[in-house]
Image 1 (cartoon, rainbow, N blue to C red):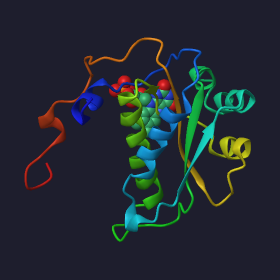
Image 2 (image 1 turned 180 degrees about the vertical axis):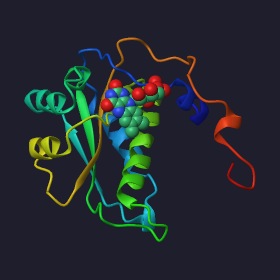
Image 3 (image 1 turned 135 degrees about the vertical axis):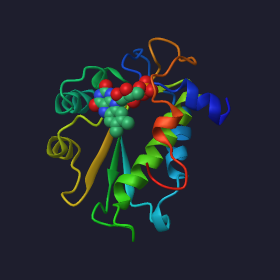
Image 4 (image 1 turned 90 degrees about the vertical axis):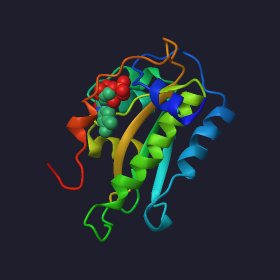
Amino acid sequence: MNVSEAILTRRSVRSYKDKDIPEEKLHKVIESARMAPSARNKQDWKFVIVQDEEKKDELHEAANGQKFVKEAPTVIVGVATKPEDEMKCGVGTGVVDVTIAMDHITLKATEEGLGTCWIGAFDQEEVKDILNVPEGCRVIALMPIGYPEEELGVMYKERKNPEDITCRDTYY
Ligand SMILES: Cc1cc2nc3c(=O)[nH]c(=O)nc-3n(C[C@H](O)[C@H](O)[C@H](O)COP(=O)(O)O)c2cc1C
């Protein structure tokens, strides 16, 4: 699968098979995050791989009760370890870096036949408590990952038109 195919095939998966992810597949997925770029190559991130049933159950409660969060065999939790750092442009590096790495995860997972879903609807403090994340860190996203109940395939994506999201030489 090439990058374009992965981009077109990836979709939010909210229903997973009750089947564990082989360790070598999980390793490849995590490697894709490890190889992601980061501002000044600081790599101020941590990816908590959650497979414990009790913890997944707690995570799903902290994520608005979204059931598939506990049904997925694994949940990867992306954490910025220096969330206060900013680039010269005033944008926080933590959110940007962890988001890039986790998007690598979504695409690599697709290549491996695995489904993912971004989860932003969660309680920051509850998730920190559940996973023992230090106070100074910030949880950026939860990402259930596993074999999709329905096979992945290229399908229609509801998206804005190119001319609505781009402009030339100046903002309009
Ligand atoms: C930052 C972010 C947070 C999201 N949070 C949730 C969430 O909490 N629950 C959920 O079901 N989907 C969540 N989504 C998935 C979006 O709804 C989904 O990506 C969008 O509708 C486009 O559909 P697609 O991913 O299938 O292409 C999130 C996506 C992003 C990028």
